[in-house]
Amino acid sequence: MFSADADLFFWPPRVEIGTRNWFGVLYLLRRDIDLCMGIHPTTGQPVGYRAEWPGAMTMLAGIDLLAKFLAGSDDKGKVGERFCNFLERFFTGISPGDRDVIYQLRNSLLHSFGLYSKGGGKIYRFFLTGHGSGALVSHTPPEQYNVDLRVLHREFERAVTTYQAELGSDPQLQTNFAAMFGNYGRIYIG
Image 1 (cartoon, rainbow, N blue to C red):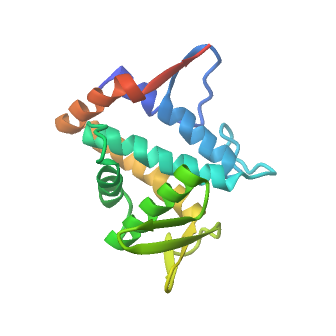
Image 2 (tube, rainbow, N blue to C red):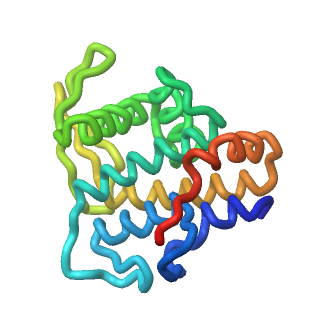
């Protein structure tokens, strides 16, 4: 990896770090997503409970976080652009329409803890599923959008891996990463 900062940020979520330490924000975020999705963060084995709404919120916040690092910017008024650019680059086969749906889900959950959003002249009424075997997004006209959280989780983890690999060999991405790390990359828990 190109730097110790990136090593900390991308620390494998299955490797437990002791208390009273610096933690990469992405490391903590991924462990929290696992737990919310019913996966033990250290063993990777199923646990007997889930908190899928907070898991979805954490994945969407994670996309926001990674989008800042990808862009090397946290400029106000550019959130949607950054978010959709990250999805376009790192989510497999996601259409422009589906990128907008995931962005509207982000707005719905993170701003209102709800499943309704308006944007771009459309109304979005969300239904969250956890099948893991279908499409990330499906649409039942006129306003119903189904998002499979298991697929979102898989795509998020794959996007993290792909971004990390590109970051290791792309000087521009490294410059962008370094610009964001001081503000968003690590926290101390004591």
